[in-house]
Length: 330
Image (cartoon, rainbow, N blue to C red):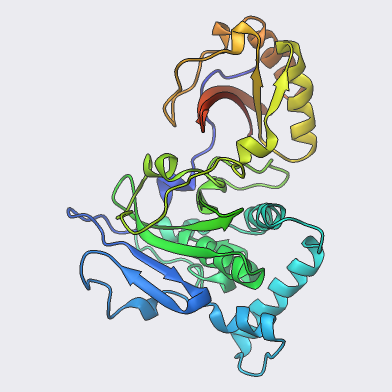
């Protein structure tokens, strides 16, 4: 039976560990490819940039073929990262395809280190860096973002890591990446909800989104960071399907689940799918407003009793797209 409009997952977005502050948190942007850091709020982090994990030695070892300077821990990260690239990345792939493969791999290989959420805030060591993510399989937000940064540097895809705060004022980190000449925002941590379990479709709610979209739940000084001036390589643009009838949606949902994806984006010229408004990021659209859509959802859920289904009207550039989410629960 479908539970309408209720998400059964607690997102890491709501649980990412940090200390709250009454004043706005400073923003630090780290670009490992140039071993540089830029900080807002004056010099509040000027003496502490070394606290952010620098994966440059590992990515440079990969690009130069010289691993002689790596210590034991870096070598373990290097070996795991290289084997992952060998398994996932082929020369004919575009930068977008490489980025997507890495995003999905990180979501699958790691789970949020919930031990950091206990009263003492004590979890596994290294959950804030690629060792925890790749070797231990446990990470907090900075573990996800530094691992994504590492892979992008190894693949020579421009990327930066942002250290700032989420909408509740808690410390948080995420990435921006340049694909096809435009900068997109990525939060791998928030695409890996809690609780984690095997065979859960991968979500892409925060994969290659615009600055404006990211700002609805992330708080940072964005004055020096680029706008997203194209939607060509958003996940929605890359996966959206133009349909001729609502009845086509169920097959798209089935195909997505088979491919371990948790969403379907559709657009159409039919009147039922012509929208003038969008939904807020955490607000669902009543499927009963679209003739035949409830029947589609009920049919899908009768075959997949461990899924909840809901939809949203999402702005994607100049278009408003209907996105259907299929959330699997244990």
